[in-house]
Every structure is written in C-alpha cells, then in structure tokens.
Image 1 (cartoon, rainbow, N blue to C red):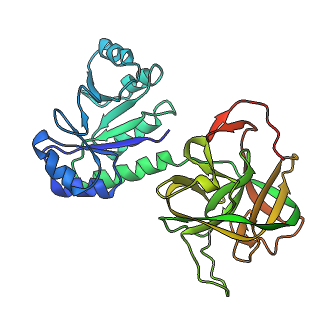
Image 2: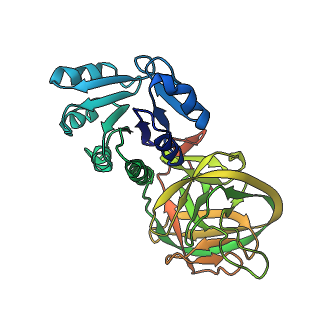
Length: 335
C-alpha cells in the first residue's frame, strides 16, 4: 500500500508549508490558529488539535511509547484510525513490535535517515511518516525517500513474438499523462489481467509526427492496464486524475497521473508472444508506426516492424480473476 507522508510544522513557517506542498505531502499538521492560513495555500488535508480536516483524538491518535503498556494501547486500536508513534529516544524496537501486531502506523521522525529506517523496518516498514523537519532540505529528501518506497519493482521477462494479425477498425485508448516519460519507460498493458506487454511511450521523434513524451498509445478499450498495489483497470475506464504505473526495462515503476484518455477509432492489430516456459501474452494495439513495444535493452520497437521471433519485454502475474480491478482467487481461462 502507498506510504503516507505527513509533515508537522510548529511553529508555523509559511516557506516550510510551501515546500511541503510542492513535495507532495498527504497532509500538513499546524497549530490550530494557523489552520485557515495553511488551508488557503493549497488543497491539502490539514491536521490540527481541534481544527482541521483531521483532528487529533477523532481522526487519528498520538501515542508516546515509553513502556510496553503503551505498545499495547496502540494494538487495542486495531488499525481503525492512523496512530502516530512518538519515541522519547529514536529507536526502532517499538515499531518492530507494532508492525508484527497491527497496521495504520505513522512513525514520527525528525530526519530523512530516520524516515528511511522506519520505512524499511521488518522489510514491511511503517505505513507512513510524520516528519518534524528542522530544514527545508529535510522535507525534500524525505519526499524522495517516500517516493522510492512507493515505487514497486516488477519482474520483466523476455518473450518471443509468435504471431501478428490485422484486426478490424476498433476503439483504442491513448493514455496522456501529466508527466514527461523517459526513454525506455512505458505502461504494462495486456489482453488479460495476468500478462502484460511493456508498451513504450511516444517520446520517439518520427517523420510522421512530433514526439509526445507524455503519452502511451496503450491498446484497445478492452485491455487491462497495471495500476499501483497490484490492481488493474480496463483501458476504457481510465480517466483524468487516475493513477497508473509506468515501468522501465529493469522493472522499476513509478506512479503517474492521467491527464486525458483519448479514445478514437483506428485500424488495429493483434500481437501475440510466448515466454520460454510457454506462458502467453497478447494485446490488440493500433496498427501504426508510432506505436511501439519495448526490446530487452529498453529500446522501442514499432509494431509495424515486429516479426515472428523478435524479443520484447512482458510482465506476468498470477493467473487469477479480477473483480472491479481487484485480484480474486478463482479458476479462469482467458483466450
């Protein structure tokens, strides 16, 4: 699950609040008298004692760990609301104990290093961080640590193209993101929810059109797209502000937002491939030179030039069913 990033700024410092907002925090904790001022700076959750979108005691609890009984008090909450863990002296032992027993744990930290350790404790880490910064850099560095913690690493495999077929005119989806995508970066798209091609973004200059490094021409409306937290969606269901995964050749992912989903009728083609152990992956894509899959070395390969025997990258998940994008353990055979 996504790691939460909160920042507590007391005494109030407008510059620190602005940097926190620019760093993408999920909530800012300020003294109650500064609630309105903080709220006017941007649309973000404000935490406060008696004022705020989230109020201490009602929407979250704060527990100072000084003895074993304090840990027991956290466990009794059963993860129903976030619990901010405060330590008199920085130590990971209470967090280790609590991670094994409950969830919704927000560890209070003062430095980026403490944040990194808290997010890696017991391999699972705290569910979030409450940073009490001393400098602007503390906020920026912790934001980078949170971003890295939220980036999944997925296993990609080489698959060999087995067939391509022309498909009649169909509706296809262009995923226009609010981010600039790097060379070798793309989205995981497939005809089934257990096998995905790495579809390259359109940052390649072409004689036919300018580069569009924010775009992935993903495939037909029925196809699945990989989302964070092992979820999927049909391409036709993706809309503005939805979060999807991008992925590079090494399986490093990041979360980007969709700005627009362009659905248009276009000539299409089916591309099929197979892994060394016989698993199959397929996708119906637009039949055009500017649409590309990704080679094992991260380079784009146009679908109009792909031939039998060519190798591209794919990701395979467990062969399970899906219910509204959530994985469901059931017998399923998709063709």
